[in-house]
Every structure is written in structure tokens, then in C-alpha cells.
Image (tube, rainbow, N blue to C red):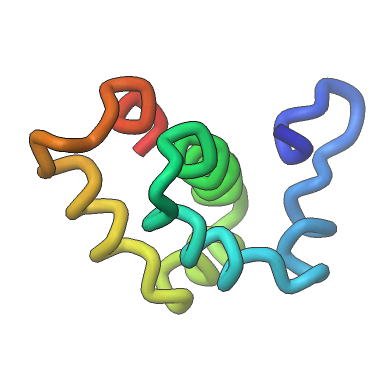
Length: 82
């Protein structure tokens, strides 16, 4: 996950590149590995600044993340990233 590099915080670069709407879309992907990576990246962004957290909220990703967390059909590895 590019946001989680040790030496440099790439979170703002990911946001500035416009990735958040795509990540929101990818959390509903049919492949659980894609869902997991998208959730992991969004969780790293949500662990950032207040402005970065607000971007996640404004993207509308929260309802989809909640649905993933609540669903019995969600892969446990995906749930661990939600």
C-alpha cells in the first residue's frame, strides 16, 4: 500500500492525484483482494489529518465501508481493513 511507506507519507499525494473516488468504487469490487487493498488505503488516509479524514467522508465511502463491515458475505481479511 503506497500510503503506508515508512520514510515518506504519500497520503496527500494519493489524495491530490484524485484516487479517493476510485478507491470508493473499488471497495465494491467483486474480488476480495481488490476490496482489501482499497479499504487498506482508505483506512490509511482516514488515519491522517482532519482534512484528509473529511475527504473520505465527503467522498461518500462511509456507507459502503459500513455495509462491508456488516455483511456476513465479506471476506474476513477485507473486514480487518474496514
